[in-house]
Length: 232
Image (tube, rainbow, N blue to C red; front, side, top):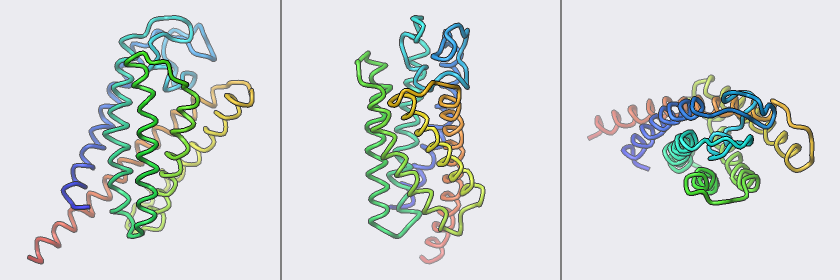
């Protein structure tokens, strides 16, 4: 992978995080209220609403959420294609020299990106799709790719310890959230704030981890560029 492609990947990821947070905040502002824990809630709740609640054109309480759903869908598209795709497609080859590992991370991540994009797509075009099945199918390869990517940062000495810590903590919380999700959705356990709450915490940690990756790789890119310039 050349350094120019890495540079644009870093820019894309940083912009996608900013766009996602901006549009996501607006979509939460316009959300009319209600969730599966408290149907009488008057606004979007960080702890009680799921991320996907914001992309619903009609909330679980029957209220219209057309503007909020459009904003949230665009926010998800920005993060999925502008953030996750370049991270999984480009970053592995700048973190490790193990080609088979890099290829595994890349294509597991790309698969997760493709499947997860069906969620905002179904909202924008009002296509009825099996939400829970899509979430699980996207999560499994996505978490596996992220776990392998975190592993490469843990064995790479040039990475800041905070990047390693945030990535490890994010993965732990994401795994806990997946266990909660499967227990509630497929095994009938009662729904509590732990499920939507840990989902948001894992997402925020993921955004911080992604920005940390871009900072370290950008420093490496500048160093390599300087070495190439002096060698000519």
